[in-house]
Image 1 (tube, one colour):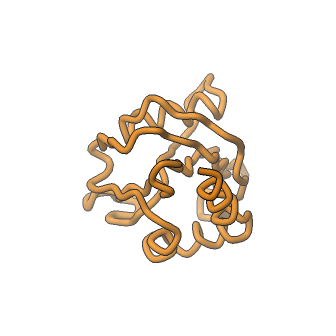
Image 2 (tube, rainbow, N blue to C red):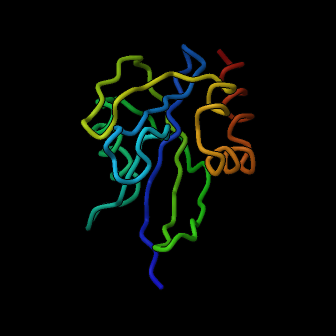
Image 3 (spheres, rainbow, N blue to C red):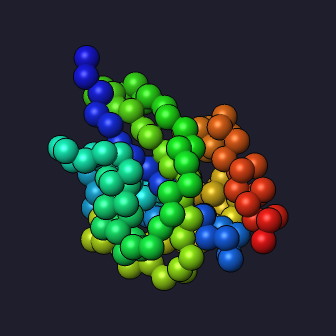
Length: 141
């Protein structure tokens, strides 16, 4: 069995002390109206970091992004399994220009993330101490 590789970004804005969440469009066949982090499939010939930057630009319009480090890697055992490489990223801008794949965005604090993101994502965030890492960055301001 082969698994696709998907990159996801956890985009933190140090000035706001918040993480960017984007909402899938209402007509999306996979996860309509759900909240997520920007990301997508790696295209042929891309390395994961290139794919991450491309997906962030395509989905949010944010071109100036710093990829801090890999946050975690997880395998999703669905009908068609896929491997997610999640990156911690930092953006200086608050301006977001959504693609037609998404209908809304929010710069979210920890509680908003917990309330808006699907349980599987929150479980990964908790398991890999993402909130603690982000809180440490926020406190360094």
